[in-house]
Amino acid sequence: MNRLPVLLVALLVSACAPVLDGTPTWPGATLDRAVLTEADFPAGVRYSRLVEDPGRADGADAPPSMATMPPGCSDGLTKVIADSAERGPGSAAKYDAVYDGARIAMTVLSWPLDLPALERTADRCATFEVFFDESSPGIPMTTTRMPVADEDGADALVYQQTMTLGGERSSVYMAFANVGSMATFGLVTGEPNSDIAVKASLPQTFLDVVGLQIDRLRGL
Image 1: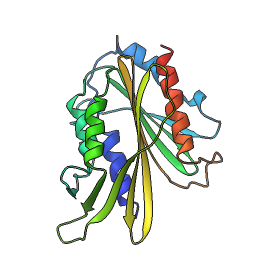
Image 2: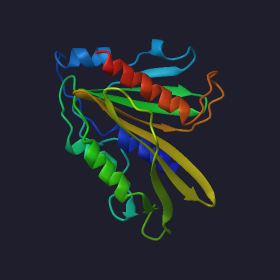
Image 3: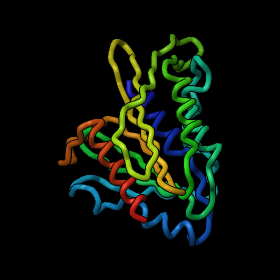
Image 4: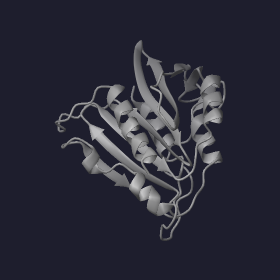
C-alpha cells in the first residue's frame, strides 16, 4: 500500500542531485539564508538538513522508474526538474520536517523551475495506471491540481497524487514554486509517528510549510 508514495518521495527528493564539491559563494550563500531552519518549526518537529554525496549521479539512490500507461508518468515530473537543473556548489539545498502524520521533504533551488513543463506533464498524467511488474494489473493513479492562494511574487503549482489499491486510496501532495530567480519544491506523505508530539493535518500542514518557504525566498 505504501510502496508507491515511498517511490514518489525517492524520485522527487533525488531530482536535483548531485551537488558538486566546492565552497558555496554566490548563489550558495544566498541559498543558505533561504532555507527554513529548525527554529522555523514547532518544537518537537524532527528537522534535518540533507547533504548530498558530491560524486553521486542523478537518482543514484532512487528505485528504478515503474512502467505506466501512458508511459513516463511515474517519473515525469522528476525528469522535468532534472532537465532544467543547474548543478554545482550552492545549486540546491534539501531538508526534511517530520510530524506525527506527515513527512515533508523540501528542496530550495538557486534557479527557477520550468513550471509550464511541470504543468503539461501533470496534465498528461492526470489519469494513468502504474505497474509493479509486467504480470501485475494496472493500479489507478490520478494527478489533481489543487487551488492555491495567490502568492505575491511567486508562481506556484500544487498537486494531489492519489493511488487506489484494493479499494483504498492513498495520496501524496506536491508543490512547486518560483520566486524571482529561485525556486522551491516539496512533497509530503502521511506517516503516523506517535513518538512525535506535534501532529500534522494534511494537506494544510504541508501548505503552511510551503508558504513559509516561499515567504523566506521572497524576503531575500
